[in-house]
Length: 238
Image (spheres, rainbow, N blue to C red):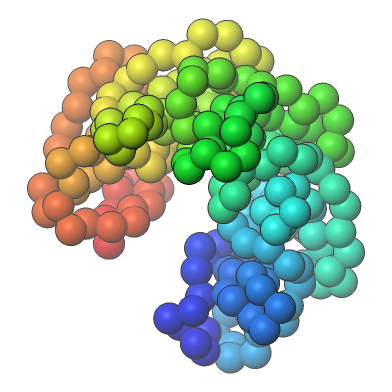
């Protein structure tokens, strides 16, 4: 796309035909969509952190008003899904498209606090049944669903007046229940078979964590390694 330096949080549509991303326009943050290989970009919503629904018919957008909306990427038609959303947090669709997990502002949190204390919340795609899924007195970010939709991994980070401690990767059943710590790090990403998580460990690089045993295997030692995604059979770092 053009203006690459201003384009952030890119997300490919499920069929890889279009790219959604957010950029700063004259009126503030905007979600735009561009066709693959094209230079034209259309504005579809005000906000950021876009994520595609599994069927590619909607984008979940974190709006400046502290809400999540589902937006039609063609018409721009909007419907409200949830409120009390943490600034900048990206919602995660369940594999079947019926629910979304997101970082929500913790009940009773001081709106002037930085960072704002958050919980992990879940809501039906039609906007009903919003509830706290994990309340662990931390900043809970980067939710990601297991491939079978049975669990959600996220990063829990504790903050104090001296800064933050290394984040913990935790897993919670999608139906609710106790959270389970599996590793120290951030940015969890499930393997296609759901047996492992790729994470960014505190010391940098990329590591794999066996979700069942907690065994950690270092994949990339380079502390400058950035975002990473799973291929069908391997993990790649960039």
